[in-house]
Image (cartoon, rainbow, N blue to C red; front, top):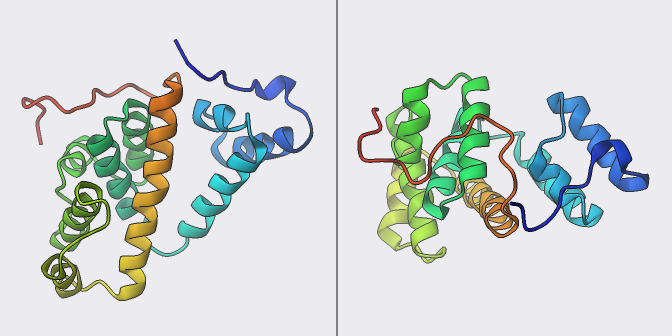
Length: 184
């Protein structure tokens, strides 16, 4: 049972309705994360703005891979489920979504980004000089490194919120954590 109720799109008014209308126009429906965030139109608007702005540079697959490793590390079933579906929509296979949750990207450069994202999460941002050198040697610029950190932070926000709210999952459900037997 959810701990924070979702705002029903059909009964929302004012700014809340406008924001949920925008989400529905983009995604085809208003996911429960957005409807639960809608308890605070300011929080929903901030999330949507941060997400939209960050969606302009790193490619969709890498953004989803970062979201998946973050959800796995934070034990967020809602986000693991949502980003598995969104990853598939971005062209990821089932095996790639599972691999991303384990920190393995669809290529060596993306694996370096996921290794870095995992280090950010485990060390709460206090990565070593060697870890920073590794991500740079994989070909990432300081701007891209900044965006990787920003994507991790954005996903930590949704992970923590969904874990706290126990948001009802409205995507095909995946288990968190991954079982050892999950195939790659």
